[in-house]
Image (cartoon, rainbow, N blue to C red; front, side, top):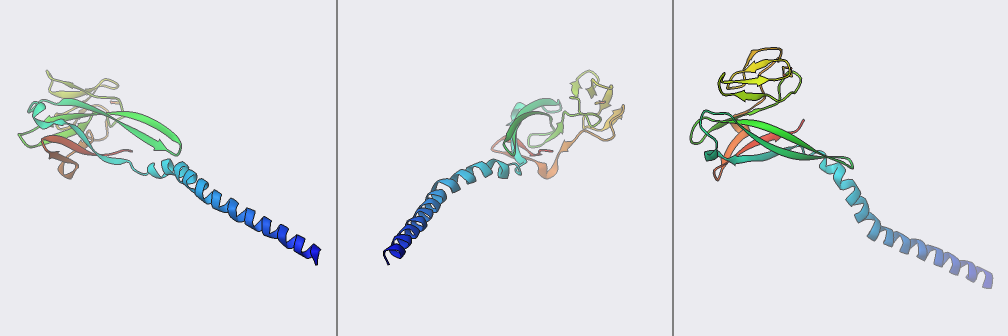
Length: 164
Ligand code: FES
């Protein structure tokens, strides 16, 4: 009789210890796991409205480069990328924004005021003021932000940016 009491007390302690351990694990472990998983979940967020500056600060008819950075979380790895967009203000309320990344192999294009063209220094491509290919190897125009990818809020120009 005494033996079986002894065993059941030990079992009781084992069960109690396991239960307390589980409770502590739940209290401490779950927030830790949620914290560790969180960066992985955020990896899916790759689009955002990016403010490029006050619209009035961009000269009408003259492409002006605006730059911004985006940090990207891939699992536990964080990287920061820089991007450039040429803003061509077309009126008091509207603007066209063009990526400065050449559609051939990704070099950065420059605006040449004299020629009124974007020039890619890598393989001598030329693009018109609206981004159309005028010469060289690029297969398509510069990536363009227009229509519902551009908006002006409280005087600030924003583009809807999708990170590839
Ligand atoms: Fe621009 Fe080749 S990368 S022309």
